[in-house]
Image (tube, rainbow, N blue to C red; front, side, top):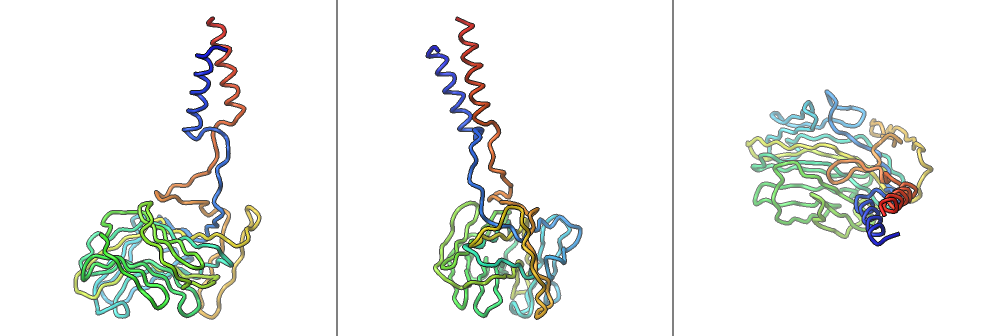
Length: 285
Protein backbone atom coordinates (compact mmCIF):
# COMPACT_ATOMS: atom_id res chain seq x y z
CA UNK A 1 0.00 0.00 0.00
CA UNK A 2 1.43 3.38 -0.99
CA UNK A 3 2.04 6.23 1.43
CA UNK A 4 -0.85 8.16 -0.09
CA UNK A 5 -3.21 5.29 0.72
CA UNK A 6 -1.94 5.05 4.29
CA UNK A 7 -2.37 8.78 4.69
CA UNK A 8 -5.94 8.62 3.41
CA UNK A 9 -6.84 5.75 5.76
CA UNK A 10 -5.31 7.68 8.66
CA UNK A 11 -7.36 10.75 7.81
CA UNK A 12 -10.56 8.71 7.58
CA UNK A 13 -9.97 7.10 10.96
CA UNK A 14 -9.03 10.40 12.55
CA UNK A 15 -12.16 12.02 11.13
CA UNK A 16 -14.37 9.29 12.61
CA UNK A 17 -12.72 9.67 16.00
CA UNK A 18 -13.05 13.45 16.03
CA UNK A 19 -16.72 13.27 15.03
CA UNK A 20 -17.49 10.62 17.62
CA UNK A 21 -18.42 8.04 14.97
CA UNK A 22 -16.27 5.14 16.11
CA UNK A 23 -18.50 2.64 17.84
CA UNK A 24 -16.90 2.67 21.28
CA UNK A 25 -19.53 3.21 23.93
CA UNK A 26 -19.19 6.26 26.09
CA UNK A 27 -19.95 5.94 29.79
CA UNK A 28 -23.68 6.13 30.49
CA UNK A 29 -24.79 8.18 33.49
CA UNK A 30 -25.62 6.08 36.55
CA UNK A 31 -28.20 8.65 37.62
CA UNK A 32 -31.90 7.76 37.79
CA UNK A 33 -34.41 10.37 36.67
CA UNK A 34 -37.29 10.44 39.13
CA UNK A 35 -38.96 13.75 38.23
CA UNK A 36 -39.31 15.87 35.09
CA UNK A 37 -41.66 18.55 33.78
CA UNK A 38 -41.37 20.58 30.57
CA UNK A 39 -44.63 22.44 31.36
CA UNK A 40 -46.03 21.66 27.92
CA UNK A 41 -49.35 20.47 29.35
CA UNK A 42 -52.33 22.80 29.02
CA UNK A 43 -52.60 23.08 32.78
CA UNK A 44 -50.70 22.25 35.93
CA UNK A 45 -49.82 18.58 36.29
CA UNK A 46 -51.26 17.96 39.74
CA UNK A 47 -49.70 14.50 39.90
CA UNK A 48 -46.34 16.30 40.19
CA UNK A 49 -47.04 19.71 41.74
CA UNK A 50 -49.03 21.50 44.39
CA UNK A 51 -49.70 25.17 43.63
CA UNK A 52 -48.63 27.42 46.51
CA UNK A 53 -49.79 31.00 45.93
CA UNK A 54 -50.25 33.40 48.84
CA UNK A 55 -51.37 37.04 48.68
CA UNK A 56 -53.47 38.96 46.18
CA UNK A 57 -51.60 39.90 42.99
CA UNK A 58 -49.43 36.78 43.08
CA UNK A 59 -50.17 34.10 40.49
CA UNK A 60 -48.89 31.08 38.60
CA UNK A 61 -49.44 30.38 34.90
CA UNK A 62 -48.20 27.43 32.86
CA UNK A 63 -49.93 27.91 29.52
CA UNK A 64 -46.96 28.83 27.29
CA UNK A 65 -44.74 25.79 27.69
CA UNK A 66 -43.05 27.26 30.76
CA UNK A 67 -43.82 28.00 34.40
CA UNK A 68 -44.48 31.72 34.91
CA UNK A 69 -44.72 33.25 38.38
CA UNK A 70 -46.04 36.76 38.96
CA UNK A 71 -44.93 38.05 42.34
CA UNK A 72 -46.25 41.07 44.24
CA UNK A 73 -45.11 42.11 47.68
CA UNK A 74 -47.08 41.81 50.90
CA UNK A 75 -44.25 42.05 53.42
CA UNK A 76 -42.31 38.79 53.07
CA UNK A 77 -42.55 35.15 52.00
CA UNK A 78 -45.15 34.23 54.62
CA UNK A 79 -47.53 36.98 53.48
CA UNK A 80 -46.99 36.84 49.74
CA UNK A 81 -45.35 34.47 47.25
CA UNK A 82 -46.01 32.37 44.15
CA UNK A 83 -44.51 28.89 43.93
CA UNK A 84 -44.95 25.28 42.94
CA UNK A 85 -44.06 22.59 45.46
CA UNK A 86 -43.53 19.07 44.16
CA UNK A 87 -45.15 16.09 45.78
CA UNK A 88 -42.71 13.92 47.70
CA UNK A 89 -40.04 12.48 45.39
CA UNK A 90 -38.71 9.11 46.54
CA UNK A 91 -34.95 8.52 46.22
CA UNK A 92 -33.74 5.86 48.59
CA UNK A 93 -30.04 5.82 49.46
CA UNK A 94 -28.00 8.10 47.20
CA UNK A 95 -24.49 9.23 46.35
CA UNK A 96 -25.70 12.48 44.77
CA UNK A 97 -28.89 14.34 43.87
CA UNK A 98 -29.12 16.64 40.84
CA UNK A 99 -31.77 19.30 40.28
CA UNK A 100 -31.58 20.76 36.78
CA UNK A 101 -33.54 23.12 34.58
CA UNK A 102 -33.68 26.59 33.07
CA UNK A 103 -34.70 29.89 34.66
CA UNK A 104 -34.89 33.62 34.04
CA UNK A 105 -35.86 36.72 36.03
CA UNK A 106 -37.02 39.25 33.44
CA UNK A 107 -37.80 42.26 35.66
CA UNK A 108 -36.18 41.69 39.05
CA UNK A 109 -36.96 45.04 40.74
CA UNK A 110 -36.99 44.05 44.46
CA UNK A 111 -38.04 40.40 44.30
CA UNK A 112 -36.37 37.03 44.70
CA UNK A 113 -36.36 34.01 42.38
CA UNK A 114 -36.05 30.78 44.37
CA UNK A 115 -35.39 27.11 43.74
CA UNK A 116 -34.61 24.48 46.33
CA UNK A 117 -35.25 21.18 48.02
CA UNK A 118 -36.35 20.08 51.48
CA UNK A 119 -36.22 16.73 53.22
CA UNK A 120 -38.64 15.37 55.82
CA UNK A 121 -36.36 16.02 58.81
CA UNK A 122 -35.77 19.34 60.51
CA UNK A 123 -32.84 21.24 58.98
CA UNK A 124 -32.91 19.31 55.70
CA UNK A 125 -33.21 22.48 53.66
CA UNK A 126 -31.24 23.75 50.63
CA UNK A 127 -32.49 26.69 48.56
CA UNK A 128 -30.84 28.95 45.98
CA UNK A 129 -32.13 32.54 45.74
CA UNK A 130 -31.46 35.23 43.15
CA UNK A 131 -31.92 38.41 45.16
CA UNK A 132 -32.65 41.77 43.50
CA UNK A 133 -33.01 44.02 46.54
CA UNK A 134 -30.12 45.73 48.33
CA UNK A 135 -27.77 44.87 45.45
CA UNK A 136 -27.91 42.02 42.92
CA UNK A 137 -26.66 38.77 44.43
CA UNK A 138 -27.17 35.06 44.76
CA UNK A 139 -27.87 33.50 48.15
CA UNK A 140 -27.61 29.90 49.27
CA UNK A 141 -29.68 28.91 52.30
CA UNK A 142 -28.77 25.51 53.72
CA UNK A 143 -29.84 24.14 57.07
CA UNK A 144 -29.81 27.15 59.37
CA UNK A 145 -26.97 28.86 57.49
CA UNK A 146 -26.77 31.17 54.49
CA UNK A 147 -24.10 32.44 52.14
CA UNK A 148 -24.38 35.31 49.64
CA UNK A 149 -22.18 36.68 46.86
CA UNK A 150 -22.65 39.39 44.20
CA UNK A 151 -23.95 38.01 40.91
CA UNK A 152 -25.83 39.33 37.87
CA UNK A 153 -29.38 38.03 37.59
CA UNK A 154 -30.16 36.10 34.37
CA UNK A 155 -32.83 38.03 32.45
CA UNK A 156 -32.83 35.43 29.66
CA UNK A 157 -33.08 31.66 30.04
CA UNK A 158 -29.92 29.98 31.31
CA UNK A 159 -29.48 26.34 32.35
CA UNK A 160 -28.73 25.60 35.99
CA UNK A 161 -27.82 22.55 38.02
CA UNK A 162 -27.76 22.01 41.76
CA UNK A 163 -25.79 18.88 42.70
CA UNK A 164 -26.00 17.66 46.29
CA UNK A 165 -23.51 15.25 47.84
CA UNK A 166 -23.47 13.86 51.41
CA UNK A 167 -20.88 16.45 52.50
CA UNK A 168 -21.27 19.34 50.05
CA UNK A 169 -23.30 20.88 47.24
CA UNK A 170 -22.37 22.48 43.92
CA UNK A 171 -24.29 25.11 41.98
CA UNK A 172 -23.72 25.23 38.21
CA UNK A 173 -25.05 27.74 35.71
CA UNK A 174 -24.54 27.95 31.93
CA UNK A 175 -22.24 24.93 32.16
CA UNK A 176 -19.88 26.53 34.68
CA UNK A 177 -19.37 25.79 38.35
CA UNK A 178 -20.46 28.85 40.32
CA UNK A 179 -19.78 27.70 43.87
CA UNK A 180 -19.08 24.72 46.13
CA UNK A 181 -20.22 24.71 49.75
CA UNK A 182 -19.21 22.13 52.34
CA UNK A 183 -22.32 21.06 54.26
CA UNK A 184 -24.28 17.93 55.15
CA UNK A 185 -27.57 19.85 55.40
CA UNK A 186 -29.55 17.21 53.47
CA UNK A 187 -28.22 14.40 55.64
CA UNK A 188 -29.42 11.04 54.32
CA UNK A 189 -32.85 12.23 53.21
CA UNK A 190 -34.42 9.45 51.14
CA UNK A 191 -37.25 11.66 49.91
CA UNK A 192 -37.34 15.33 48.95
CA UNK A 193 -39.72 18.07 47.87
CA UNK A 194 -38.74 20.59 45.20
CA UNK A 195 -39.85 24.23 45.29
CA UNK A 196 -39.67 26.75 42.41
CA UNK A 197 -41.07 30.27 42.29
CA UNK A 198 -40.48 33.65 43.87
CA UNK A 199 -41.59 36.33 46.30
CA UNK A 200 -41.42 40.06 46.91
CA UNK A 201 -41.81 42.43 49.82
CA UNK A 202 -42.50 45.58 47.75
CA UNK A 203 -45.49 46.78 45.69
CA UNK A 204 -43.53 46.30 42.44
CA UNK A 205 -44.62 43.42 40.22
CA UNK A 206 -41.95 40.99 38.97
CA UNK A 207 -41.96 37.87 36.81
CA UNK A 208 -39.83 34.73 37.10
CA UNK A 209 -39.83 31.73 34.76
CA UNK A 210 -38.76 28.07 34.94
CA UNK A 211 -38.66 25.31 32.34
CA UNK A 212 -37.41 21.74 31.84
CA UNK A 213 -37.20 20.98 35.54
CA UNK A 214 -35.73 17.60 36.42
CA UNK A 215 -34.56 15.68 39.47
CA UNK A 216 -32.21 12.71 39.26
CA UNK A 217 -30.00 10.87 41.70
CA UNK A 218 -27.10 8.46 41.72
CA UNK A 219 -28.06 5.52 43.93
CA UNK A 220 -25.74 3.77 46.33
CA UNK A 221 -26.67 0.49 44.65
CA UNK A 222 -27.89 0.43 41.05
CA UNK A 223 -31.00 -1.57 40.14
CA UNK A 224 -31.23 -3.78 37.07
CA UNK A 225 -31.75 -1.82 33.81
CA UNK A 226 -35.40 -1.07 33.09
CA UNK A 227 -36.53 -1.89 36.62
CA UNK A 228 -39.21 0.38 38.02
CA UNK A 229 -39.01 1.59 41.60
CA UNK A 230 -42.38 1.54 43.36
CA UNK A 231 -43.15 4.12 46.02
CA UNK A 232 -45.98 4.58 48.44
CA UNK A 233 -48.27 7.32 49.61
CA UNK A 234 -47.32 9.26 52.70
CA UNK A 235 -50.60 9.44 54.62
CA UNK A 236 -49.15 11.81 57.21
CA UNK A 237 -49.03 14.75 54.79
CA UNK A 238 -51.72 13.56 52.35
CA UNK A 239 -49.50 13.93 49.31
CA UNK A 240 -48.70 11.24 46.78
CA UNK A 241 -45.09 10.15 46.39
CA UNK A 242 -43.66 10.07 42.87
CA UNK A 243 -42.23 6.80 41.55
CA UNK A 244 -39.36 6.52 39.10
CA UNK A 245 -40.09 5.33 35.57
CA UNK A 246 -37.90 3.71 32.89
CA UNK A 247 -39.42 6.15 30.39
CA UNK A 248 -38.03 9.17 32.22
CA UNK A 249 -35.22 11.05 30.44
CA UNK A 250 -31.90 9.21 30.84
CA UNK A 251 -29.78 12.34 30.96
CA UNK A 252 -30.32 16.04 30.38
CA UNK A 253 -27.35 18.14 29.37
CA UNK A 254 -26.76 21.79 30.21
CA UNK A 255 -28.65 22.73 27.04
CA UNK A 256 -31.51 20.40 27.86
CA UNK A 257 -30.81 17.83 25.11
CA UNK A 258 -30.59 14.06 25.60
CA UNK A 259 -27.71 11.90 24.41
CA UNK A 260 -27.68 8.17 23.80
CA UNK A 261 -23.90 7.89 24.10
CA UNK A 262 -23.61 5.41 21.18
CA UNK A 263 -21.46 5.68 18.06
CA UNK A 264 -22.81 5.55 14.51
CA UNK A 265 -20.23 3.41 12.71
CA UNK A 266 -18.43 0.55 14.42
CA UNK A 267 -14.96 -0.94 13.96
CA UNK A 268 -16.26 -3.23 11.20
CA UNK A 269 -17.41 -0.29 9.09
CA UNK A 270 -14.09 1.45 9.64
CA UNK A 271 -12.18 -1.65 8.45
CA UNK A 272 -14.40 -1.86 5.36
CA UNK A 273 -13.63 1.78 4.52
CA UNK A 274 -9.90 1.00 4.78
CA UNK A 275 -10.13 -2.03 2.45
CA UNK A 276 -12.17 -0.16 -0.16
CA UNK A 277 -9.74 2.74 -0.07
CA UNK A 278 -6.72 0.44 -0.51
CA UNK A 279 -8.36 -1.41 -3.42
CA UNK A 280 -9.27 1.86 -5.10
CA UNK A 281 -5.70 3.17 -4.97
CA UNK A 282 -4.22 -0.11 -6.21
CA UNK A 283 -6.45 -0.04 -9.30
CA UNK A 284 -5.28 3.49 -10.06
CA UNK A 285 -1.65 2.37 -10.23
